[in-house]
Amino acid sequence: MTDHTDPAMPAVQQLTAQKGLHPEYCSGFSLVEALVVLAIVAVLSAVSGTTLLGLLPEASMNRATRTIVSMCRHARFEAIKRNEQIRLQCDKGQNTCEVRIKKDNSLLRRFNLTELKHQHFLEKSYTTHFNDRGRASMAGTIIIHNSAGLSRSVIVRPSGSVVTE
Image 1 (cartoon, one colour):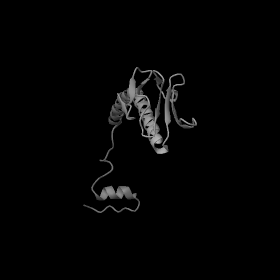
Image 2 (image 1 turned 45 degrees about the vertical axis):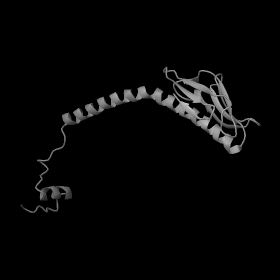
Image 3 (image 1 turned 120 degrees about the vertical axis):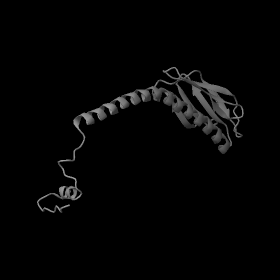
C-alpha cells in the first residue's frame, strides 16, 4: 500500500486513504432509505402518541386519589403530632378537600379538584376528625369521579387507616 501524504489533501481524506478507503467508494444512506426510516418513526410516534393520550385521564385520576389519601394521612399524623383534633373536610359544593386544626380552624392543607384536568369531582361531602391517637371520629368513603367516567374510592376507617379501591 502506498503512503498518501499529499499536503494539499485534507486530513480526513488522508486518513481514509491510508486505511484503503477511498471517498469515491464510500457512500452514505440513499434518499429512499432515509425516507423509509422517517416514515417508520412517524408511524411509531403516531401510535404511541394516541396510546399515551388515552392514558391521561387515568393518570390524572390516580393523582387525585393519591393526593386525597396523602391529605388523610397528613391530617392523622398532625393530630398525633399536635396532640389535638384535626379536621378533614371534603366539600362537594366547592369541590375541595381541606385539613384544618379543629380548635382555631387554621388551614393546614387544601386541595382543589377543579384545578386538575379531566374535570374531577366529589360524589358527596365528607367530614371527620382525627384525635390525638390518630383515630377517625367517623368512618366513611370519599368517592372521586372524572369526566372520562372513571371513579375511585378512598376509605377512611375508624382506626384512622386509609385505603383505596
